[in-house]
Amino acid sequence: MKRRQAAFLIAWLVAAVAAAPVAGTHVAGRTTTPSVSVSLDQAVHMVEERYHARVVKTQTQTDDGRTVYVMRLLNDSGKVWTVRVDAASGYVQ
Image 1 (cartoon, rainbow, N blue to C red):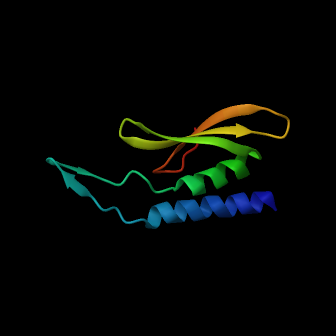
Image 2: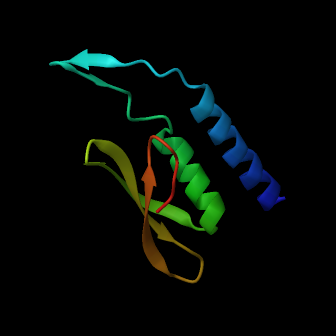
């Protein structure tokens, strides 16, 4: 059942990103596009399902103009690690 939920969530995120309007903002001679398509809550849920672990800390950072969620995870055996999620695409690093 977990795989089905994860597959549904990923399909939903892909559809949401594809359907999101691309509205540009004109700032000082250049056009920028919104950098967030995946909310922090969506990213946390996606990462917890994918890694079967609990997100215990989150940070939002900007890397080269892109919003990135940095998450610290903890699993049942006590392992702690960090993942990064691109807020625009949902790509997990």
